[in-house]
Length: 295
Image: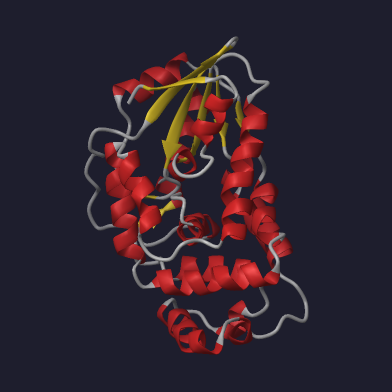
């Protein structure tokens, strides 16, 4: 996920749907291969891999360098290992994302945004009656997910399921830096004003989602972290409070989880966490880790 927070929401939202429409033909091989770093400090000698959570069916992204790193590692560490439990994820989303007595969604955005909200809902095949029972952050995720049904991508074809299958087959343990509940809590604890701004930005991003995703996919397949970082300069800037809660604070927490680790973990997180302000690589270096790009 890229650093602009509404776009992070857009890609993370796809984990809330079982699968989107598939491309008619298999995708080509990713050019050059996604970015991979070796991370070392004391008894820690592992890898940091930038992923993308949803992909077109048939996209080949593995490379000899990635395979070699996975073979040499002793375990897999994901953002949240339990995110692959679809039933648990949806159950938590319903529990944390719903509240009683919420006002209609149209009343949670400025008057000048109401027409755009109604259009975004209609374009995505949803409506206010379905979304108004959700808190604004959750409604933003659902609105984003509904607007992406035609992207031809799926979480099932993303990087994480492939990694999990490989490590399970190798008999290696799989863990996480946080839980799904922690991921949702980053949104759920935002004040309503920040959630409303997030909803408005999601509305604005909905129309250009395919162009955005295609740009991200191309950059990720080349390992072009500069191009991913430049997404910060496109479109609206994220609300600082949302960015802090959803990205920066989580990066700090992840460093705390990584610091006591030893051995050879293969750590896989969204590529957007590896660029921008207080990204995971910078934070690890500040704690004395040597981080070397190997692909």
